[in-house]
Every structure is written in C-alpha cells, then in structure tokens.
Image 1: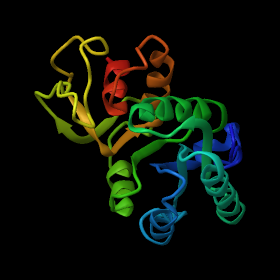
Image 2: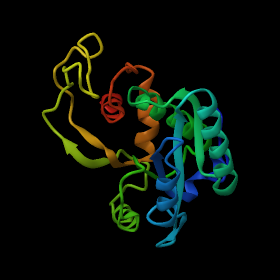
Image 3: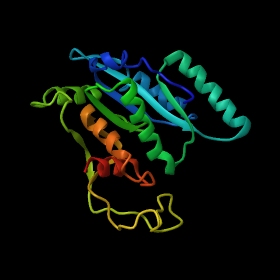
Length: 220
C-alpha cells in the first residue's frame, strides 16, 4: 500500500462513531475533482449530530517519470488532507473490482464498525445531508443489518463487442445476464453489508468486470 490513513475512523474500536463513510473512487490525476468534492458534498462534518468522513481510493496511472510525478503530487495532497488510500496496481477500468476489494480489506482492518457507506465516483454530486437523514429514519437498522440501495439496473448483461470499453469475453463471463445491481456511480450500503460482501468476495471470481456486479454477486 502506497498511501494509507489507518486512523481515518479513529481506530477500529472507535469506528462506530462514523455514521456515514464516503468512499470515492478516483485516479491520481483527478486533483481538481477531489478539491471540488472536499469543498462541497464530501466535506467532513457533523450533520444531525453524526459524523461524516471521507476517503478517496486510487491505484496508479501513467509510467516512468509521469507516474513518479503523479505519485509525488498525490503524496503532497495526502500530507494536506489525509484522505487518500492508494495501492500499487494499474488503475484501469478492468481493475475497478480489485480496487473495491482492496478497500473492503482496508475497512475490515481499520474501520469495521462504520455504520453506513456511500460508495461512488469522483464525477458525481450527492446530497449527503439528505442521505444522513434518510439513514437516520430507517426503522430497526443502525447499520447492523443488510442495506444496499441505489439506482437498480435490470435486464443487463456483458457487452460482447470487442471494440467497446466494456467488452467482456465469454471466457470471463459465460452468462449473458447480470443479476440486479445498483449502478456504480453511487450507492448506499450498511457497514454490515460491506463486511458480508468482503467476507464473501473471496469466493467470487475477481474477474467480474463491474465492481457493482461483484457486490451483488457476493451478497447473494
């Protein structure tokens, strides 16, 4: 691991104090996006008496001098904001699932009792105040039961066109349909569901092309 924030949630034992953990997928070059989010919906704060915390998760891009430059800039950014997790893998579309699983591993170690998570991209806007109020209004679920909610996508399957960014060959995914899943731009889940998915992910095939599909497969 290249960049870590082990105390982001106050330590594993105190992590239940984090009501909503914002887990935002990013890449090293997207500094401006991260800056906007830090100043808007991803600001770390108290809302309705509960804590909102923020983490950006990233791999590496570029090569040679460019990679070194990006990583150095990311280190400087980390020194200022202390909100980036970075791993030593090539951050590509096909490694998004790896990024998701590595985050869940980090969560299990450093933030296992966080109540709820918003898992999303760095190019979306979200009303996190409303999310907190929605989650506080749930009956009989303080994060210790299953919750997985977002934009449900139905009757979709792998793209078979080799020219597509989303191409998935039959050797990787035999079935022509995916289970119901929430779009990866942003979805809410409970800390309990996140840990169940992490524990089940070892039994799922990591070459599932969309991380949000893996989340559903692992939960089934």
